[in-house]
Length: 442
Image 1 (tube, rainbow, N blue to C red):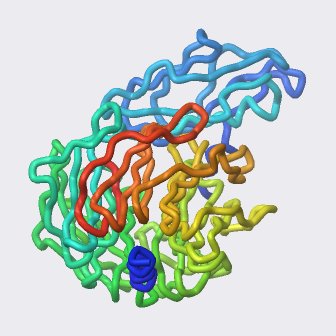
Image 2: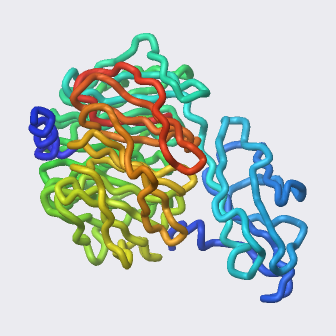
Image 3: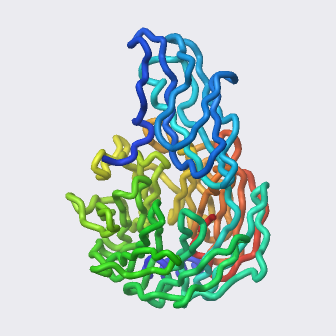
């Protein structure tokens, strides 16, 4: 979290990329008139046991990520409905279908996507005021139970936390210019590595692990991004160079699902820097190196297909929305911004790419939005729900069923369940440390 931004929160408290939806296999069987082969593109599958079905009958066993087709063609105009018959069991995963139903045509029978995520088992909260990380187990109903011990020590002022994709390691960005590094036990508990911290830049704002789990990036308020390789034990080693220049006041780093592009929200520069990621994980500025966004951007969130991007503009009280070009560049949508609440600081997209949720710090609310097929955000009804005092971070669990919100000004984290229409229903609260500033889900 950017230092100036973090200070502002305290004042307020006191006062070729992976474009899954456009990929496909050999679509129509006999041309535009049909019949059509129903083709799906699968991403995120980490185990075995995923089986899809069409119209409640024709089944398709999925062995790997990529494109696969059902054996029975569908006549032109006939209804199709692709659903998950069984999800991967080891590791336990939740798989969601998008664009899975309609009347068969050449345009919609190859745009079906299935995105799988590991079922959440643990949740962690970085507590910036008491220098700890709270740790919880996640029950099947989404409720949180404190682990033993309920928290572990971090560096001074942990403002962000991230977990690697394998669920074996965790990292916090600390305001004292370090990154704490942990191993994660089978039960989810954290243990500090040796060494417990590695150096970062000036006033780290956030930490991010790339989708492969091989690289870690830290946004530093001083104007650059630290870059690390992840060793076989999970320990971080600084790359050469150890950091690359970004915009003014980097607040966060977001890596595209392909692992080929990274975006940095620059809080003081009102821009998003754009980087390509080399095979060795090093960042290089794209052309253009940055795009203009709204006032005081804090975070970039991507939909799971990597086709769309959203930015929280904390002073502008709005969200910028972009399509992502084939080279990873951000292109403003026809409607470039949508309204948010007061001081939007954090945004999360559900694993199906259907809904987005925004923590509005100043009016203590969670904005809720539907994501249209073209990526545009539309406010749900109601447009927001109450949140704990001064929400600083919001996250959606990997199954896409629960939303968690950390409160900066009171020591709790709040859970909401996601209804079928994307709206939130209040669940249980859990106690965390003081100044909760970041959430990570394993």
